Amino acid sequence: MKSPSVAFLLVLAIVLSSILVDPTSAESDYCSKNCKMRCAAAGVMDRCLKYCGICCAKCKCVPSGTYGNKHQCPCYRDMRSSKGKPKCP
Image (cartoon, rainbow, N blue to C red; front, side, top):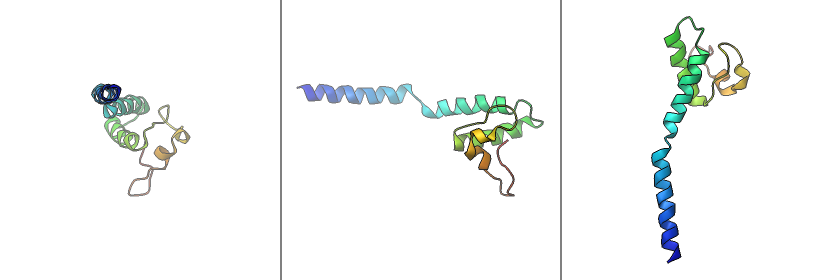
């Protein structure tokens, strides 16, 4: 009698956690917030936000500040465009 109630509670916990926590929106909020800060001083804001968003989604981090500090996120630092130039702003 004890095991069916434990199994039910476990299934209920899994269902509730999947409903209440949406990892993609949390990542998206993180990227949009940090990319807005990163691109605040950019000359071409929409391009900066686009590439920062791509890099953040892949690397799951954005360096602090509006320029430099790429050592904080090696994946972000090392991404290259097809022409071999740094991809991430």
